[in-house]
Length: 141
Ligand code: TYD
Image 1: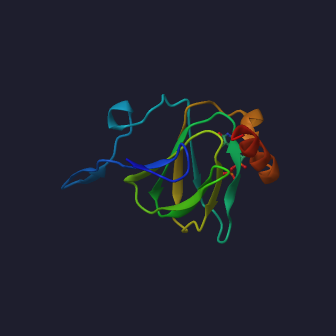
Image 2: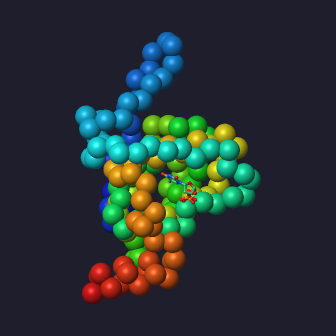
């Protein structure tokens, strides 16, 4: 696991179990997942030039894995920001609560799998960037 400069975010190298038939990756608590999965969704067939996300969650933990193709995920905690290129199925990105995220530069074949610790809750979203920064600044005082 590699901590990122953004709080609550890190990358995880997943173990690939390969043999002469191909490859398999398992994600569970024994392989480092720090929460129980309440929801999984995946983003695919993203059109050329489209970026997604542009929100934060008040109280949600997620792992994102680009199981096919590649995309870039920007994460920002109100102070620090970094971008991770998810370009292989063996690289997971953990995103904690109160992190602004944007997904950019999807390849045509990108399938971004997201595992989350809570069901879909529209009220958990912070979709306004200014409001996110106001909240993170208030919390850091
Ligand atoms: P949206 O949050 O806009 O996607 P992104 O942040 O990746 O740009 O979600 C797109 C649509 O899918 C929107 O109508 C909400 C719906 N949705 C669900 O019903 N369940 C989910 O778990 C998610 C993530 C989205």
